[in-house]
Length: 246
Length: 94
Ligand SMILES: [Zn+2]
Image (tube, rainbow over all chains, first blue to last red; front, side, top):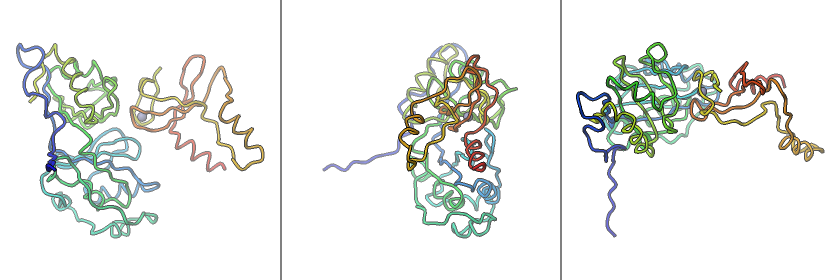
């Protein structure tokens, strides 16, 4: 039997790069795919939300948001994802067991037990939890799932999402005009700012949108199985302005 | 109709799934009159003209269950709270 080799493929790999829609002048919308992200969901265990937030602040120096916002930077970010839920995004190509905590300059817990005993939470759950997992489809990425299970697994359920989600970055002078054709929330700067997050839908496709900067630049996170449906909507909606896929 | 989600802000009702009356409590299946109580619980509903506390699920948003107080005549919404908060309150009240 022939050996089957499965190689990682990004969600938008089959889409040709370049210009679509209106071709005169500069593009109204610029899209690019984020293929460098490892992702995992974090869901606080019952009664452990405060201990989880304390521990994340201690280990990563970041406050898990309790409103629809995101914190962090390109290396590690936490997006609000519902009450007591977050989505972690991380970049890096540093192998399966990440020294992420060392790189962000804070001390690491050696085990679940250490993490649990060093916080005030008395009811922290104890192992065993599975401690291996893939954080991203491409392998060789930072293993965010294992990283988070080791650092905060006592307080939260962690599930890798890198295989299941696609991320598009959108910018350009007509990005608002385009998104307004499908996104039911107000992106005016008085209503939605850099650092804000919303979970909603575009053309019946569930999306998480976060604003990166005030230019404005946005990221759309969606189920990768719907990425081509989303792309079809984006091409149609940005057509009058011209779309550049870089 | 727009529903002010306590987590997400005001959103169109198309983002939500409707369940119904939030006051229903599952009967004790071991009670002697359990069958009659379950028939009531499963099938019989009041149909008030006015304020009704009802369960909505923010399916396309934060995935939280909410208790929405809605006037069935006007769709005016006078209150929204997480269903979890309402359930905890009921638990504490016994
Ligand atoms: Zn919501």
